[in-house]
Length: 289
Image (tube, rainbow, N blue to C red; front, side):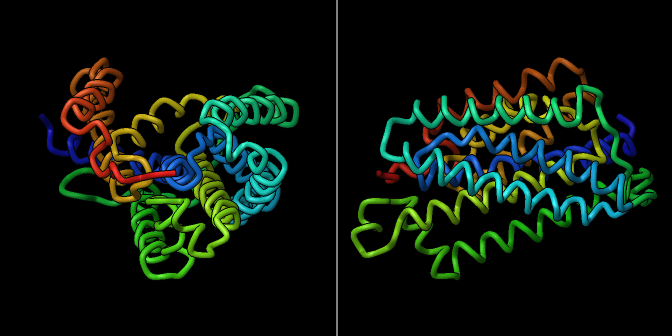
């Protein structure tokens, strides 16, 4: 195999894994803390991409567009959390799954009404390529990888070193005991929901220059994101990172070797993980609610 093609495929896989991680970590932590399936995260991903496109087209600033996408998604997420999810936190998991899927489909319909069905291109904010062991690698993909690595460290420090982060981690392990210690668990829910929505919107903004923005972009990534969450273990940011890297490389190298492998291999990996460790690579058997 040509070395330059192999390096290009690895960088492509790492950049895709970075997007997968931003989109999946919200799903994982929302279930870990709140025991809800927040399918509406894919709406915030789409909104982040569309607002990045719109603001970039008007102002010429990609980063302003990404910021507007994050803020707007957080506002929508706050409305959804306060008006809908707050009413179903104590109900079964199917309530959150069906309700959040309804929110996603409603949002997709609104995006179609506003922006239409025509896919929208977003220019790369960081042009050029960098030579890496004989391969020409797009600078923007390296930037995405580096940015998400920094965000992972920031998220880990937030959860490990801050009072709010420790309360969230305690809630993930056992929500009832955490609430018994005087922690307002519902405020933790709101904080986690907004963190998840902002990361999903950022994923959409960063992904926009790498694909064509369209109303169904969130729906297409749904199965991949859920596989990553399941493989990594619910509520584990380390597990989500490892499984994102694993799936990103499997898909990228699969296309390089033989395209059908890219579609089949993630499911094979998920089944193998189920056989060895049903809770996922870093999932905890002690999570209670």
